[in-house]
Image (cartoon, rainbow, N blue to C red; front, top):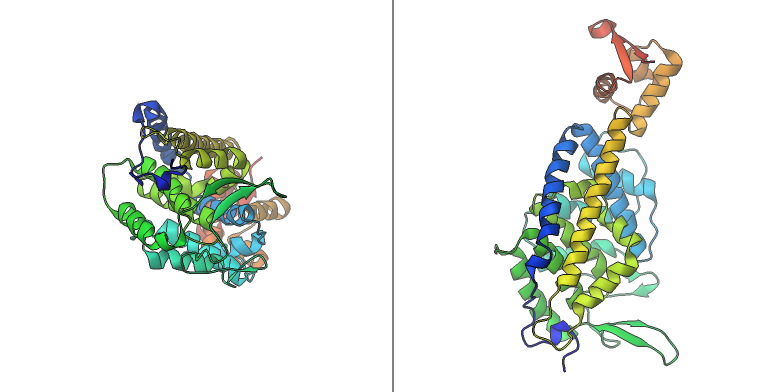
Length: 361
């Protein structure tokens, strides 16, 4: 009998019973609509700050899941510079940091561009700029070769190894990925959120690369969610959630990849896990937003410095701030002062160039 779903005669025709999770899907839609309205009320700069924070966490957690630790300040600086944010910072980032950042930004900012083999190869090269995973040399920017044996997920040792999953043979990958990419890019009647869940499972089942498949599958998930108007995914880290739910995440994936010798077997367990995770992310961002507003607004590090300076030197003028923070443009300082005033952290006295600022008690 066939043990894995990619060995079934009707592969890759995934089946599911939508009635079992339609309420979850509907709830996620309602929550994300409400959340987008809240995020828009934060204003563009705070949205940028939230985006920067989330992309930084996504890059860090994505690398950490695969056993790689990156410098957080390098990641943050690299992302800010590439997004053209004025609070970019001046820290020089390593090549491997820049590669992961470029990959993440391409997926989020160009989510409507077609997904191609070449684009996937570019992402893979960005993940492994030195051609190595840890100390091991790997095939980069090309499909895996299986030169040392079949691609398997194995646990145990010393004659007690247990094979949890075996991917399709390497000589089938070109055909498998051609079919996957055609389905991924085409317009179909599948809800894009469900399509994101299927794409995630399908990609890791094919396991087209020697390493980095998990990171790329989660990137494809974010890409499809953005196409589905789930814009909130930019402001909360899916990677961080997976890291915290790693055991149940892998269990759900393994459950979705096994064939129990039944043509009616569905991928509902995986889809339910996926939708539950999506709802968790939405609630996390709502809590984050509510915390911002309960404090009278969210302050980034630069705005906190400005508030501290005003508190210690009040009353102050814009010119005083320009001298105190020469690394920040006067245009940005003006916007910060306006935000601090709007959120009732400070008061403005006078008009135009004669305006003084004091901290509100």
